[in-house]
Image (cartoon, rainbow, N blue to C red; front, top):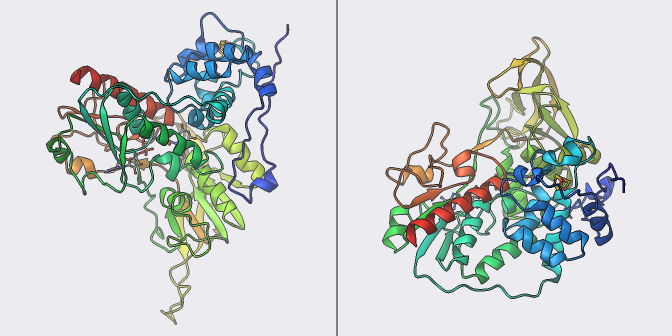
Length: 469
Ligand code: FAD
Ligand code: SF4
């Protein structure tokens, strides 16, 4: 039977509706669509898609189970390799991972199998229908501390708890989930999905202590004094980078992390919130990654009049996931490509220093760019076009040009080696320069992906088990 060359479309909320609400944009495959999509898989002998998956999910096997209508079995195949399938099915960049290797795509130049969409379907089905109780393993008498409740920490904690370790996660914020709850907005990843994964960990016996900042409330040395035999650092890369241009200290300039945390976790969208955010007016988001797309689309949903994405390269180099870019475009986000900000402009009334408008953002001055020779990253270097400056009238500027690991843990942990970008230096198995201290995820690599953070949590859990058991 001939294979349908097109991936089955994902049902979504209409752009003009979803631009005004925080509900999930993608609605998920139905059983009928999932079964039809699964039939596109050729069940290739050499399984290139598995190689393309950073945690090597047995992709053709779970797809075969969908074809047979065995959805719980399909879930169990995925769950052997990934502890957060409902999350990964939604946010993994499949187009550059498993799907980029799919035979349909590589050999036949068709759409790849919708592996991510099928993964999400199976995980959602399981979360809705499974009744099985979590199996609590027998305690093995060893204690491990995990710093940070993001994907790397949650995965490391889960893998160790399944082997009987008494695991305590120390999380700085009041809610567990890391970027999955404070960064990625509800319309891409509903909070209930992350909360469910955290609940499952708690059922396994993992203790989650929120509002504890390691490096302030407790140090790593104190954790060892408390009887922990190993520590995993999964503290992420939450320190925002700025451009160092004039005007960055004006009122109405946010880092994307602050803007998204205020809206996601501190409920800034409510009437009179305790942690408010500027709503309405025009908004400029600087950057072209997933974080920039999330900030722009959040600003739109909070009531912005016009939202610009200002990015210094062209669409070809823009690093955000294609699907997110398309969704942002459909919602009316205005992409100003090959533009770079040189100054943020503010209101200043010299005759009245008490004028309440003083110090607030009024606009952003940009310069046009063109692409020159490739730089060290292999992407063509953006070069300023002399005399091409122009201004956009905006009330809010959100900077989304990347983040770095926070130096707090390094500065309070003697002998912990970091590289020049602040990433913790580790061996292949996750061990740091300190004995029994392991690290992984964005704290090591700088801002990366959910699945790579999970993979690092798994590797470290294996090494901790090998060293303690
Ligand atoms: P994090 O998720 O950052 O978790 C670290 C946790 O440690 C946080 O909860 C933090 O509060 C806590 N912590 C930090 N310091 C301390 C301390 N001293 N003591 C105690 N706790 C501490 N990736 C994708 O694959 N797909 C996407 O679509 C995608 N979109 C993104 C959108 C946004 C807005 C952002 C910001 C990132 C996105 N990413 C995406 C990247 C991805 O979320 C991260 O790579 C991943 O979450 C890293 O996981 P982690 O466990 O290393 O760190
Ligand atoms: Fe199926 Fe594509 Fe994997 Fe082949 S490469 S097994 S067609 S998902």
